[in-house]
Image (cartoon, rainbow, N blue to C red):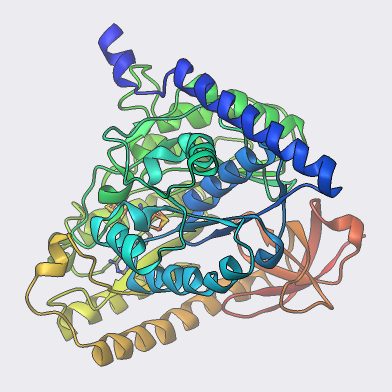
Length: 478
Ligand code: SAH
Ligand code: SF4
Ligand code: F3S
């Protein structure tokens, strides 16, 4: 048992204490800066990629604030710029590199500026070399397993002036107790596990995030309890495959047990989670959700493809029959549940027939919404080496066809909402249209309405009047 607990692989308390000392030293320097300049030095963090990265960025910001920085939205006024990168598709990497390119002139203007690149992209050897040689003005680089050591790297950089270019710790651990600076006061991310063991043949995540490791149940329960007490209304539990939660903790608590435990916390809030892998989405999990008070009736269940041959080549370890069985069971237990999915088009050797199987599957599954992606070869993954890569133009054509089919289905899923009054968590004035407010339904659907400033962060009852494939429009019942 002792061995199992050790295998729970948490960064040691001594190591976290050591980092706190670096935080204190930088804080002292920044207090001097404040005394001399009348304002705190500013820090800017830019996040690419998934919610896991957003959660990590809130920890980077948390450490920066603890070190005496004030967060800013404007890179031009920052003395510390952090770019938290993603490697999931080529586009994400190109964006990161182009942003870093743009910061070159900021560095030229301000030699005191420190530029940090971290996250999934810079765990890869070839990207570390890119930064090393092509972006000499980047000061600090570290990978996903070293995030808790950021204060140490920053201190060392400031003290010695030398660049710090580290790939990663050899071991991927869980770091508890890193300060968090949350962007929202009503929506929060809570990581329940890190890493992935699945090695889907197209995916870079297992290579850049290490093996699965779960946080202890009590740490998660305590964090969620605090968030609810602080007034958070929507808490999203994060993991690359939450269904693997607890396999390594020796606590005899799987993900469904964790949800049942969290559901006992009193308050008015929703719990979402992502992502659940279909290969081991259990009936127990669905039953717990159906019987719970706080679990949002929303299931994000990435299908990736409707063709069994492609699913096998993707190493997904389920076939369409198994997949649709889960969807049917969710709908049986929770008829109103919103089900969303991820689809990849243009996987190597995907034939017209295989692609059509995906279109047929969409018609059968009738997802409320999908996130669709054009396959992007990732260096070091098996799929990138496969023969029969699909030409870009064909991938785009399939992508457009997929969207057209799903748009109809999404509209069909949203139309029955017209006339109904639903609960919406208000996010405030819409980013794209300053005249309206927006919010999200329990199932994560975006809803637009005429709001008031005091609505932000609150649950509202909204009667839906109009439906589009990706949005609902309604009026608040006051
Ligand atoms: N762990 C989650 C997925 C995380 S990545 C899961 O297994 O469901 C989010 C999505 O990005 C994946 O579901 C997949 O659809 C897409 N994706 C991953 N690698 C990709 C690649 N190389 N090209 C295109 N899309 C990819
Ligand atoms: Fe990638 Fe598959 Fe792991 Fe999801 S389950 S992160 S798609 S390897
Ligand atoms: Fe997420 Fe991108 Fe990393 S999707 S886990 S930030 S590769």
